Image 1 (cartoon, rainbow, N blue to C red):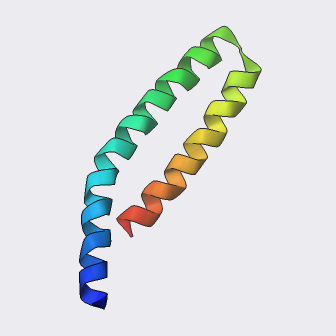
Image 2 (cartoon, helix red, strand yellow; image 1 turned 90 degrees about the vertical axis):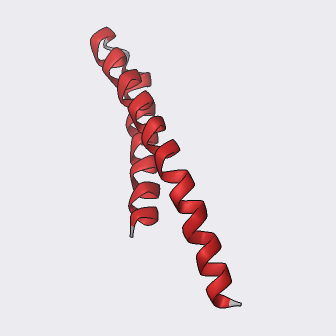
Length: 62
């Protein structure tokens, strides 16, 4: 049973990683726009979201 659960988790991670990378790319573009317009609130929001996405990616790739 444990092997089945590990296989399911691995499959879910394999599907989630490409989506997560797209989310990171989108948020980086949002951060870039915020930096250009000097929108401090959006800069901080994007940084927080990028940190959360980065941590998720690290957990999935481990």
